[in-house]
Image 1: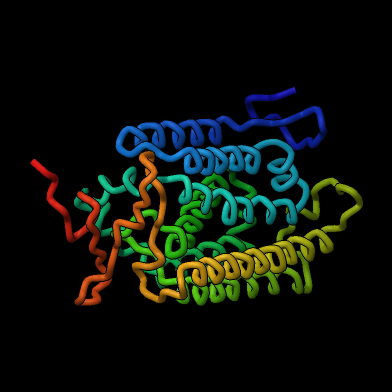
Image 2: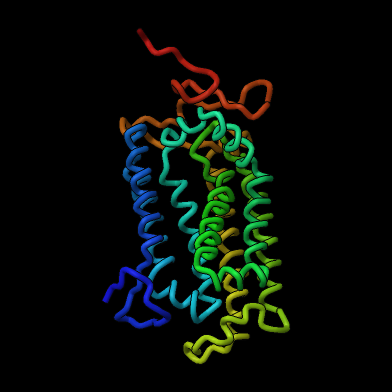
Length: 308
């Protein structure tokens, strides 16, 4: 049975609770994507990534995982957060063509704010402050007790995770990725603050999140064991994921001939006519101020005039 409204704390194979707020949000994101597709048509692989992100978001924020995480197990909540950070956010970026986002950069506020927020140092800081802040017991317990605050928590996780992945997956040369060595260093450094938070949770002497102590026991897991497992989920799979992506970046770097320029790490998607946009060479300008030049019309600071 599928319930369209949240009806209480129960987990069974025959009951899958669906929350209206998440459905509205996911439909809204899909509508924005299809509107953006009128500006630049996404490739099939991009469309698949984006809608895979939305499907993952739906199952992370509804149904069995949601009920387990909200009412029974802290460890399930950590699985939910990892899905938002390590699956939903990168898939959304990978699924979004740069042309969809480019018109927004021309807006008076959006462009400067995006350039400010997507620098690697700020992406790193914002993500880790959000993750660490929301796992402080007062903040975490308050979010569990107030559903509206819990929604804000998840929105902040998702937004911070998109920023976190931006220096590695950016689809816009105007807001460029780090070069490959920079990406590997950035990903390695990202694993450290999360590990510190995980150690704090795993080795705490007492129960940090008391709401789970009053919850019915699932599978005989004690609250302290649940807390330990939750911290380990954040620590080990979370760290392993970063190291896996570091390996992927390294092999991609080697496939590109060990190029160390920032321009060499930018997007290399293929458009619908089968031409590699990356082959329309994007290069750093001679001043080295981080702007990219390209022969692709309408994309960057150096443009080729269209024939008239």
